Length: 451
Image (spheres, rainbow, N blue to C red):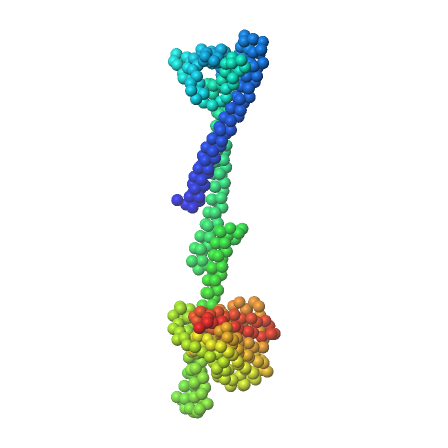
């Protein structure tokens, strides 16, 4: 069964139940209100008969009886004038041959012949009136209601037909609305399904149209965002292969050339040559180590040996380690901190070294790099270099992302430094934030959980 059909059947079921419930409630309400209206109308009519008979009693009983018969002939419900002994003085045509018996508790029993059989009725609550001079009582008998062909039955039949027609019309309108709504929902989902199949087959350019702001529109927007993320991941994967191949090719080519020159006797194993070879192997080791650490951090498989670390001595040591390179570039490095953090020393050293390396890469000669820490378990690396453009700022922690590919390639970076920083900090349960703008430098803040 298709979704469109299920939605239609569900709408039809809801509409039918709603129409039936509304019809039943409306019918009961209308009947109750109509009954109250008739009882009120009967009461007014009864009062008119009583006043007419009471006014004519002074002229004599025959005149009062004639007044009663005139007044009673126009009433919807039958009326009886009963004397003190229980006999019928006068009555509506429906009660002229009836026998009336008064019982205790104010009830009145009426028996009449109808269709060859006796019909018994009991007065159930409408008023009675005692006439002057104890001439008798006027009683309105609700048990003797209008015949099925009377106005009450006609009104009930008309109301019931109206309710049925209204219910059918409401049901039809609900079915049409359900069909339209079901088609709209199914059409959006079918479009989403076709787009998902196209993406699964490799079409990363496929998107769905987002209409409105309902749940289906949000689903479509989420699908588009997912495809964009997949496309971006695919781009980064291709870049990873190309960048890693390039980063590996350069040191491997250098090593191969030096070794072949040594084997052929074209190059002597001087300290300078050996230092160059070591530099290339260190470069390979750093790249391989970063890739391995990044993979472990992404998989949540990093093992951390946490210990208390004094920030002041730790930061000063990190600055001292990078001082030779900073001095060669003409950049001043200052470090100061206070407090203690609870972290893996080797991983935290890796984080700070990557941040310092990134700061030196983007700080010109005569600039400054400041390394600080606070008692709230924070580490801040600030430089007054070139800064980062706003369009690049939200991507700097993405793997292999480089705002200036040419410069990063020239300095030997593979674009993993900041991405690895983020993963290592998150592995500690901390967060990393960056604030930068062109011309005013960059500030990276690391917040670690308290020890």
